[in-house]
Image 1 (cartoon, one colour):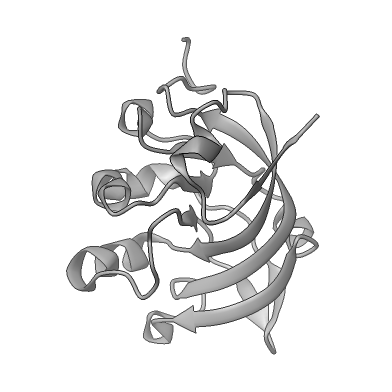
Image 2 (tube, rainbow, N blue to C red):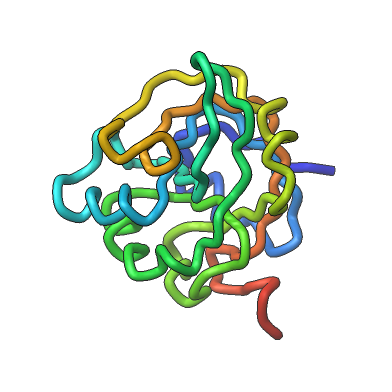
Length: 166
């Protein structure tokens, strides 16, 4: 059975999640890749980060409709985790995992399978906004409304990781 979560996430929402838990996420997620993370650091967030979920994704969007929204490898964004979590981000979606120690007492890492980008559009019900379009389509920050997006808890808030022997 899957745990249903709705953004913005609170500590109470995530503290009891464990690696291997299946989650159906609804609400708002924000896409962000390398350039967007750098700009978060330099300029701040164009949205309220408290309880936010960041999706490591460079979506393909045509005429306001998501064509594909698969995850990108998260490890490249590891150096920004402290900055994100110190500002209230509670969840990260991506593939490949990240430094599990950074998540202890702060946030969770959700996996979405690579190669399933065209399936992701089925769970994205609306493109609500876009920030920093000057970065290009895949590097802009997209505000997406999702409904029952299936995810796997791969790093929990206790710092346990499916990507390493615990």
